[in-house]
Image 1: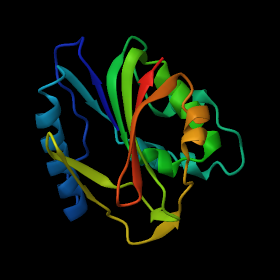
Image 2: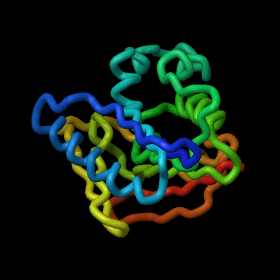
Image 3: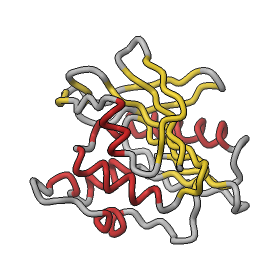
Image 4: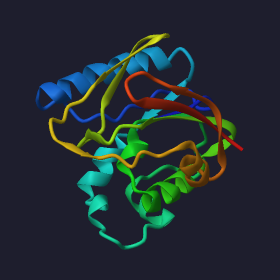
Amino acid sequence: MGLLTRREQRKEAAAPPPQHPAETYKSLALKALLAFLSQFASTIRVEDLYRTLNAARFFDHGEEPVEESAFERLVSIPRETRFDIILGWDLINYFRTDELAPLIRYIGRFCRPGSFLFAISSTLKEIPATPTNFKIQDAETLIYETGATRMRPCPRYVPRDLGRLMSGFHVRNSYLLRNGMQEYLFMRD
């Protein structure tokens, strides 16, 4: 998940060192992403949210209810931070409704009115078992690579679901792509 804010004057990137070809791709994609986004923001925070939560065994909670405090414990964002843009990519596909709503409430704390959240929702029955790697090639081209060969069921969120789950945000734009993905640009109320 990419988190951008303009107010601070330094660039930050916390990416794990490359371990194997998929990690190398992520590292190269991160460099390209940072180079592209540096044109628009003076501070960039990169958080591999899925990997962070997966390493902490967040997704193993079973039927226990998820509270915002779970994200507060696992994702340390300084209280004074305010994001202008959050690149959620396809992460919403990897959260159940009872997980997504508190995540959005937590992230919303760090957004000012008018902040953007970009997300991609799949309309397909199945998605790769892990999130897709995205790389911004240029202002008009987004390249994606699925690293997983296994598939899992997709929640197939429809606009009505997302309107309910994305508390404090509203849909600014939405585009249905030919590949079964729907891009959403949410704006903080």
